[in-house]
Amino acid sequence: MISIKARNQIDVWIAKYPKDRQSSAVMQALKIVQAENENILSASTIQEVADYLDMSGIAVQEVATFYENYNYKKVGKYVIRFCHNISCMLNGADDLIKHIENKLGVKTGEVTLDGLISVKKVECLGACVGAPMFQINEEYFENLTVDKIDKIVDNLK
Amino acid sequence: MNEVCFKNLTKDQCWSLKVYEDSGGYSAWRKILKGELTPEQIIDELKLSGLRGRGGAGFPTGLKWSFMPRHSNGQKYVVCNSDEGEPGTCKDRDILRFNPHAVIEGMAIGGFVMNASVGYNYIRGEFMEPFKRFEGALEEAYKVGLLGQNINNSSINFDLYTHLGAGAYICGEETALLESIEGKKGQPRFKPPFPANVGLFGKPTTINNTESFASVPEILRCGGQWFADIGVENSGGCKLFSVSGHVTNPANFEVPMGISFKDLLDMAGGMRDGTKLKAVIPGGSSTPVLTAETVMNMTMDYDGIEKAGSMLGAGSVIIMNESTCMVEVLTRLAHFYYDESCGQCTPCREGTGWLYRVLKRIIDGNGRQGDVDLLLSIQNKIMGNTICALGDAAATPVESFLRNFRKEFEYYIKYRKSMVKG
Ligand SMILES: Cc1cc2nc3c(=O)[nH]c(=O)nc-3n(C[C@H](O)[C@H](O)[C@H](O)COP(=O)(O)O)c2cc1C
Ligand code: SF4
Ligand code: FES
Image (cartoon, rainbow over all chains, first blue to last red; front, side, top):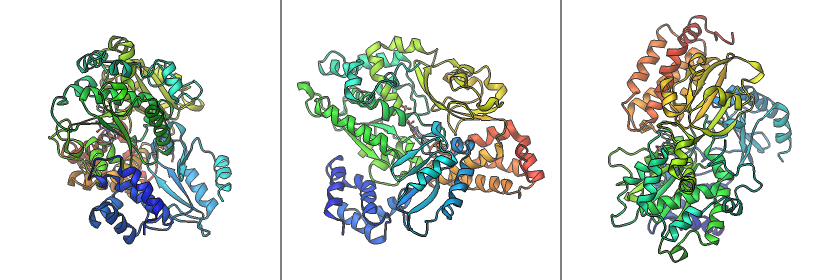
């Protein structure tokens, strides 16, 4: 069941589009529903979004699998999305990613045993002059160093 | 420096309505609301200014705006492309964070010129800080009655909304972006028809980049000629350059078009730790790489960069020093395009995967004799054979890296290690 709160949030998006174009809100609807379900989408939540927006299940599923921001596997409470594209790579991102993997005892794509943190390599996040950088949930952290990473990660609770 | 989009950058709360209005913001829009500017005058001013699309293709903005069937019946749309995601590019994020009202005013003016009463700003899903800034600015603009229905009794309507992406570089391609707003997979459309005739929800639509829209208000305030005079022939005005990589102070710089590459490099504090320049990608990952020798006399404008053998693109200048292994860089870029191909056309879907796999085996020490020629032949099969420009964008770096640094690739294949890093 999509909660009342989530419905209200989805309705804000629906209101932005012309009448009968509520399917335009699907990307946000999926994000909102995902946030309410431990950051994972399942076949049943996808169908609920489809029903709510009056779309076919397959149409929503296509969207849900096309875009990168949706998860089907367990992720941490904090998701570290480390940019490994060109500007970050030139500034040592690969070594820093190794550092974070060693520090947390996980590989990219995995979650720490306590479920707190997962790490993922991602493509350019549009902050190249602040390379190397990563994103934790919504927030960007730029000009990273080993020390800076240690401080940021140690503060995640 | 910093005369247009970054005009207020150093001011406290530079993103606020107050700072924007104190520096002349919304004066062009208010003139329009008072009936003192016509669509024709605006298009003429834009044409005079020499403003070219800042999203990468460099199409003249005034001309694009003149293509819209403004007198046709029915709904029309303006759409802003803030899906910034081309590796090396990070200017639109700063415009949204530090000067959101210029984007709003630019889009409102576009709406008036194109007779479109609704606009959408497509912001990439990861840009939550810019998104909130922009939403905050929208709220301010609505509150003082600069947006909405029958604005200031002018009988002009303009409603502006944000749309958030969900992580797909291809949505930066303008027709994929329209599909995405319609709630579909971001797969580019066949053209024609062009968006000016059949765009968002099937209606005439004009799409421009964030920086293009944000430049419009200042052009109307100070005049097209003023803007043109800042730059050089064929490249009017100033442009944001994102200088990243091995420089001392990587940053976004808004500088006059035609500035020398050397001066731009100096602004970024020169090469980091006194290292030697090896290569430059001047316009973002899809533009050809240039060697240090070629860039030294290059000027930073459309013609200057083209003369040097590359493209201005989105103005994303990636600087590489002599410690850079070009095989590694190209492999990373190939991975990006492989990852981001929407899969619609066979040459792009299969070709980007093939390019990546061949490069990966070279990096892993399993390169085969003939792999360099194989890479060239794959890129040649992609080039010009796809629905959208992502195919070409994936192929272009391969050709230029191999042309300029072929030895490094051959060395890697033969000795199974990097010529630079050992
Ligand atoms: C694969 C691909 C990605 C693109 N990404 C962007 C982008 O992130 N932002 C952008 O403004 N234009 C991007 N473009 C260019 C747009 O298709 C379009 O030309 C541009 O938004 C038009 O605006 P302009 O004329 O103001 O530059 C991309 C093009 C392609 C082929
Ligand atoms: S060129 Fe690539 S990204 Fe563009 S439409 Fe074809 S498959 Fe999709
Ligand atoms: S390359 Fe890492 S943010 Fe752009």
